[in-house]
Image 1 (tube, rainbow, N blue to C red):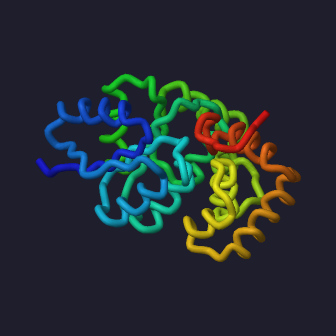
Image 2 (spheres, rainbow, N blue to C red):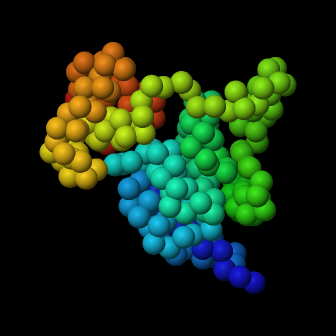
Image 3 (cartoon, rainbow, N blue to C red):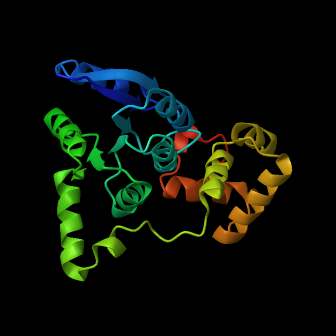
Length: 226
């Protein structure tokens, strides 16, 4: 049986260790690499071209949805499975819009995750039962699946979203410029556009927005949120 190459993406070592222990019981599942940041995940996906990426939604330096978009550009045959503590419609819809093939909750039973991997390899989408039921209900109410699965409206471009996350994580303009390969002047322009579009004009407000949207988690940011 051919090995299925898997890239694990989670900044918590204990989560990655648990997933590795789970996959050891499946003879055809092989962990080929691990990433602790979203940006690292994109690079590893480009280098190794895994069949499956197990991706946490809340990742440092580049959140899971943005990382998914970039991974699917460099490795279009890869299937991304979101594994998250967030179960709300906002996060699920953002993941779907980014191209995730599955969305499972971290409290999901081990057998459910294995089943999810098998299903997406067949070309199917897969969701935790509660999420799947909500999606079905939404479809029945509106009869417009594509509209319901669209990401929440936002005026931020992908690049602006990257800048927002790094600002919220406490990066200075020069650090953001280095991280994204941009000039400081370009970063400053993106920063101004983010503030104007969100109508938020201070760092603390941007951090609160990023936390509320699940772009970062409270403890990851070096900026004050009080």
